[in-house]
Amino acid sequence: MNTNITLGDLERLPIRAIDFNEKGDISIYRALIQCVIKIVEKNKAKKLDKEQISHFNSQIDKFVYQLYGLTESQIDIVEEAVND
Image 1: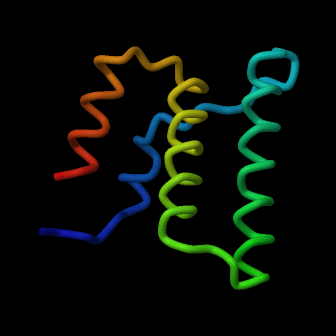
Image 2 (image 1 turned 90 degrees about the horizontal axis):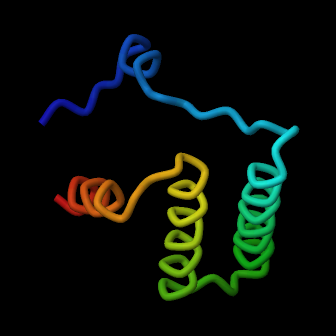
């Protein structure tokens, strides 16, 4: 399996910018930031276990799916691809 990522690979990624004029985007952005802050704080305090990591990863995934407006079937495709 080739794990080298090129600049061209990155340029083809559909990066979704946060629209700070949209309340929905702002809400998702704030939730993501709060999640990341919790991870950093718990990690600094050495109080981050595997269960919490899994919980935070699931939350982040959910927020990203919302940001991209993915349907349940699209989420299933992403989850299946990630878990392979």
